[in-house]
Image 1 (tube, rainbow over the protein chains, first blue to last red):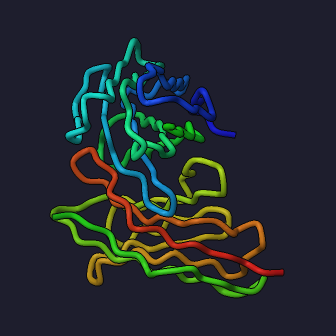
Image 2 (cartoon, one colour; image 1 turned 90 degrees about the vertical axis):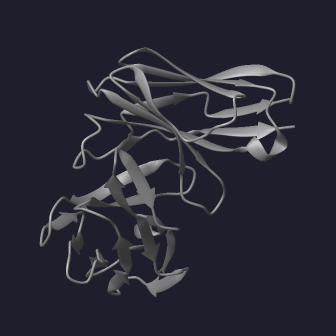
Length: 114
Length: 110
């Protein structure tokens, strides 16, 4: 059982829709992450939040908009996505952003863009 | 720049066989090293970690030793089970980011 909870597990949306992915952790972690994973590939980092502030944006297109309302929650707002954005979106958290702090992953949201 | 190279898979073994998955890295400084496992339809689970040279991480019968002289962090298990079938990712952490290898698929047959 994962301690990082992501909802929904599956999402199908059209290119003109607006939807949000949600991530929640109650481990007291202060760093949270969004990754994108295509089939048979490793996860690619998208965003990092540290102490509720955006610290890393890996040049992600503006159709993806992250939000960290509090230390336990992380959202990813989606708008006008493209078919190539279909992927597994993984959320992770770690106690801090330090070198020895492992990241704990949720099970992901599988997103399909029609 | 920093990078991780894993042996290409898939790796197919019979149950109770010995497992080695090779991982080498390129990094400036002294990164922490991790192995993650991803079962079908799930997210990544931390398998083990090592934070400095000569550290050995171990969990669930898996082991890996941080070898600075050979810049390696090979994953080993003495006797694999069918339930170990999954994708294994080697990763290093540098500058707040996890950098993953390409992943190695392990299939264990009964």
